[in-house]
Image (cartoon, rainbow, N blue to C red; front, side, top):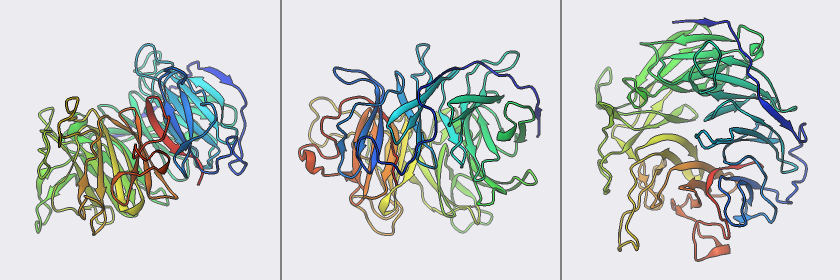
Length: 463
């Protein structure tokens, strides 16, 4: 199914440019820290204000500098490919949300520019040359059409350069060359194909797929030459039927192959599903895709927590797919937390950190009795052929922490992962899949001393 959307409508945006222009990532940082992490804090309490904290990612200490202002509720962040800037969205999903989108100059550690978006966003990407950000705003009002737009923001000037109507667009993905963006809308089996150079001047949008091709698509990954996209369909978890991965030829707009997210019956040809899996977030490492989601049946979570000792009655599943053969490689269910999975990262020592929101939490009474279960929305999967800490080969650890896992950032120079969960920042050691021992605060493993706030996302900005 293909549709062409011709009409474009430009909506006004409130723009403030404080010190626009390109920064130099090779220049010494204002804080004097050579390897930094940025941490968004979206509440003001006591002497702390909402903003972005700067952390020393080499020794887990907060920098002795003021936070960077980035709106009233700073949360999700994306770092540009050239490391010069960090993009931050501020919003709380209510009528009082400021919906501020900020451009942080990483060298000067200041807010260089910000715009007010016409709604909230959960997805924005940056062109490979770091010149332009593209922002999905699913609730943006459009005169004479259904809500939903993708805006183009020039990072050198901080100005909106154009937008294209994409009804209910929730997530976007950009290819390696930056000449194509795929847009994924809620409750749709079609994928919008956006030509960035045409945004704002007409002819920017067509559609591919449709029912029978995709099933509530939410993400895509591209081959090195951009001729192929592997599209993740969310299926029943997003109101469709079956989660799957489609190999799609972008040169001919033709479906090449599709593999359902399921646990296959060994030895069956073609593979038969022993049980349906799910997929709302994925990570690709080489030719292997790790796909996480929560199976649904009849509109409700349906996966039992088989093999886990937990009071939770439903769980999620991780599916491992070989993209070369378009086949599922795990022969038994890999059980993780339930919830809507939207964060995933590969860390040192082959450990995959998977974050969800609105999962089944187990919160013990206060004071907690000895041995009481604590369970939140973070899962750690061991990809190695030998045990790591309490995780056996191919096994899963559910850390005893409550809350949504909203930010996951492996520290590239160390065996450490920063995780924002339940409003707190936790530091995990990937050699044991447990909280890191911090010599700066020996009584509080996995924490940074004197770090007060409600933390949403974390990103390193120096490599």
